Amino acid sequence: MSKILRGNEIPPAEGKLGVLIPGIGAVTTTLLAGVFSSRKGLARPLGSVTQTGKIRLGKRTEKRMVPVKEFVPLANLQDMVFGGWDIFPDTAYQAASRASVLERSHIEAVKEELDSIVPMKAVFNKEYVKRLDGPNVKTGKNKMDLAEQLMADIDNFKTKNKVNRVVMCWAASTEAYHQSAKVHYSLKEFEEGLKADNPAIAPSQVYAYAALKKGIPYLNGAPHLTTDCPALMELANETHSPICGKDFKTGQTLMKTIIAPGLQARLLGVSGWFSTNILGNRDGEVLDDPDSFKSKEVSKLGVLDTILRPDIYPELYKDLYHKIRINYYPPRGDNKESWDNIDIVGWMDYPMQIKINFLCRDSILAAPVMLDLILFADLAQRAGMYGILEWLSFYFKSPMVKEGLYPENDLFVQRTKMENTLRYLMKEELIHHTGLDYYYNLEEAE
Ligand SMILES: NC(=O)c1ccc[n+]([C@@H]2O[C@H](COP(=O)([O-])OP(=O)(O)OC[C@H]3O[C@@H](n4cnc5c(N)ncnc54)[C@H](O)[C@@H]3O)[C@@H](O)[C@H]2O)c1
Image (cartoon, rainbow, N blue to C red):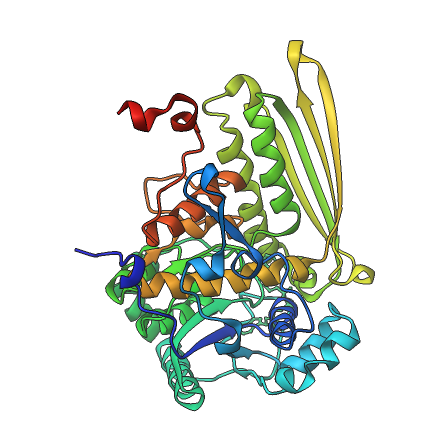
């Protein structure tokens, strides 16, 4: 029997929190520069629920809006220590410069901190990321050997930095699309597959295995399979490790899961949703490969069905034509531009159109998501939660859920789920938003 710890039963976030990241690229270096700058008071961590969010507690009449970081016991930014792996040996300073997300002055202001992060040798297989190749890669006699090398890296990192707890978050390139194969069906088969160098085990699954074996939460910022298979879920349950994914929800999909719930709530039909993007960063280059794009496409396509529910409202959504395009366009760098054309249908079947043109910055949207996920996953583990953290769906394009459930993609349902989970953890009343007790004096009537 598992038990969730609540209120002051949850151990405080004492000591240092280690953060280990496969992939020291655009998103990671933007996260790091933001955290280091915030620590120095040079930048504001906007977009982060843990740093800037407030949560309502109790009835509206109580007027209690409490900062999230004061409400739940989270690690603070000063206590975070970072490390990671990459197939290129560039320090986080060099990688940030190359990524060109941030202005030079923002990178220079935290040069020393960024330069101190030197990526460890990665577990990599070009079959899974066809557009990249790099020299900073581990060799070993089989995938189990590579997993053991990663576990040794984790141990060394913990000792060197004297960290009490560790979270691992994947922010490396999107791997080629693959589904669960027999080797992923049970932990036993998976471990045999690691020893036999089974080609169906992706590099990200070697990292996840190493983390979960050590009881470390594993978060998947990319859309590929990794822990979304029975073998690694079994391991997460066995070692009481939290897992969640997949694919940070930013940019166009964020917009989609903001707009679609509104259309559905007002019972407006949708006959077509065409989404196209241009982006020119390394992520865009990797996604230019059809196999990596397929992972992204599957993750992006799923959101509309679970929000609009054509199974329940066939008259409004059964003919919906949903198309997604990602085009690699180097001049734009990390400053992605997306266009959405939405064909909607209203009263007496009259057609209307909505156009969205979002000029976003990919990594600027992803960094706060990654920070919140790390801090909440650490909280979850201290509270005794393990396996899939569905309450963090808010941050993912393609949320992992327990078998038998469909994922919740509506951003507002996801937000309610997350806030109510925090209230539950801190033994506060869950909020149902009816207000009936106030209008009808229900408490007194009872
Ligand atoms: N930026 C966003 O808004 C956003 C949103 C959702 C998901 N993502 C995902 O986050 C990930 C990172 O995005 P990014 O823009 O930082 O990409 P990036 O290309 O800038 O960085 C990825 C890094 O991962 C490294 N890498 C590749 N395979 C590796 C391996 N096996 N082990 C260690 N390192 C490896 C690459 O060398 C590169 O430095 C991608 O999978 C992307 O799809 C990004």
